[in-house]
Image 1 (tube, protein in one colour):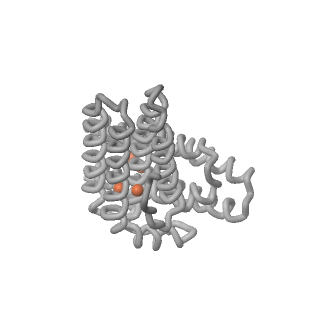
Image 2 (spheres, rainbow, N blue to C red):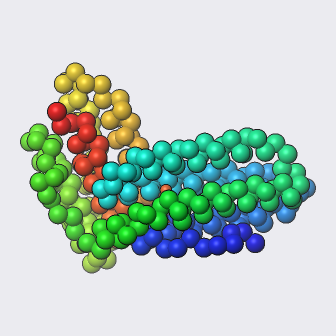
Image 3 (tube, rainbow, N blue to C red):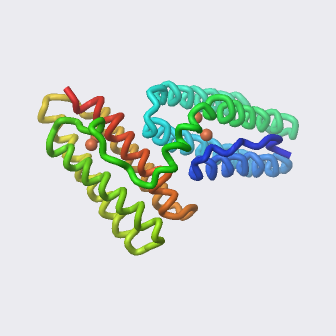
Length: 256
Ligand SMILES: [Fe+2]
Ligand SMILES: [Fe+2]
Ligand SMILES: [Fe+2]
Ligand SMILES: [Fe+2]
């Protein structure tokens, strides 16, 4: 029965939950592999694994770069390579009609997952754990971009994030929903303003715009999934999301 090993806990419940989901999807695929009369369930299970792995890598990128790892972009490249290899394996495996061929494919999936998660990701976990223990995000000089209106929006974001964190700790669902809505409204307005600003400066904001679009769609996806409560979303994802935006993307593109 797949998988034979367990991925150790990372200390971030969101990452751990996704590792659990990926493990479960391999197990589903192993069950679907037994049905050799109909290839559709097995193919479907493989596509679902591929989708979940891409989503997991996107979430992990936000958390690792938000936690301040300069090496995170190299790690993101490792994710791209893994997805590329997986796509090549899936495309090359034309004949998955036998149980043996299917099990060879499942072994590959399991190896991809375990090699990456245990050897490459584990290096980041201690620092992610240290960040996740702090319930509030402190504004520091490092976050100052040097453009007044941008800094004021960012401070407002950090402030809303902390209010959300307190509401989540108090288990005040109504306040969480209202604050999350306010946060997303602010993020959308702020992103649009930054893109107009970059354009007015004669810079091409396409790369920055794509980063904003990616960040919003991932956040929408996670906020819409009812798999975990607002506390996990705020303390184990949103704080990294805010840091990735300010310390990573903006510091790189907005500061002269
Ligand atoms: Fe992972
Ligand atoms: Fe990773
Ligand atoms: Fe910004
Ligand atoms: Fe930005």
